[in-house]
Image (cartoon, rainbow, N blue to C red; front, side, top):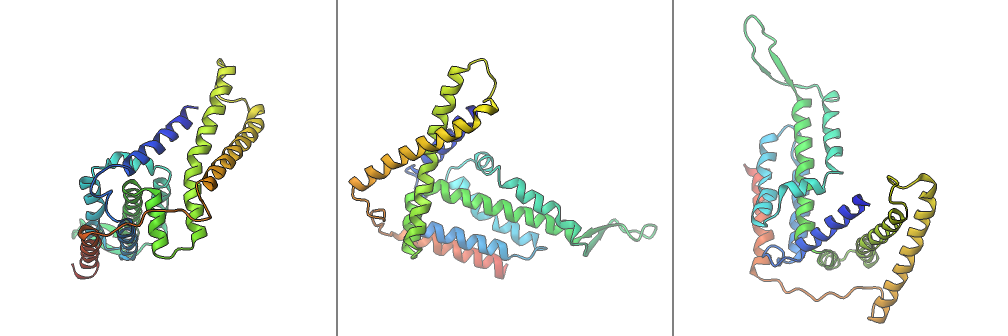
Length: 262
């Protein structure tokens, strides 16, 4: 029960970040989406031995966290399920790349020294690439609401069905989480001395959870149709201002300079 409440609190906290009046929240969602996607491609295209260039690319997420008043600690915590996978992939990379790159501490008595293989450098770059892309994804969702992201996707002509599915899945996460919290709370009130949920009740509770969630989903859909929902969501068109153009142009130029010129 505590875990469900924590996840619901995290979801509410993320929605609070999205609804702030900060100037970065007010930027046009299309510009933020394109910048983040372009940044991910630029980071992924950097050579696996080019650690220096990759470190310079970290200027974008650092800027967004500092200027956007976001907590790096909170961002890493929210991405805790993805980061272990990034670290796992990086750790196993040295076993497949043993290209010698440099030797440290070589002397006449010990001409071999310590050989730094390509696997070690590429391991670090893989981990850093994963970290930067994960933090960039968090920046995007923390500074842009799901409605604005879906609006940006429709502007670039992503199929309507895909956008609607993304929006509804995000919305029903909170609905199903609330239903799960109610069911587990009722269970613990009826069995206060029991630690956790008995395995014999798992099937019944999951079935009740799905049925109640489906009922709530039906009520939500009926409310949407009564308000004029016809298979597409209505979002007020955003008028781009000077800052909405400058933000993607400046950062795109910085990414190109770091990637190809520096």
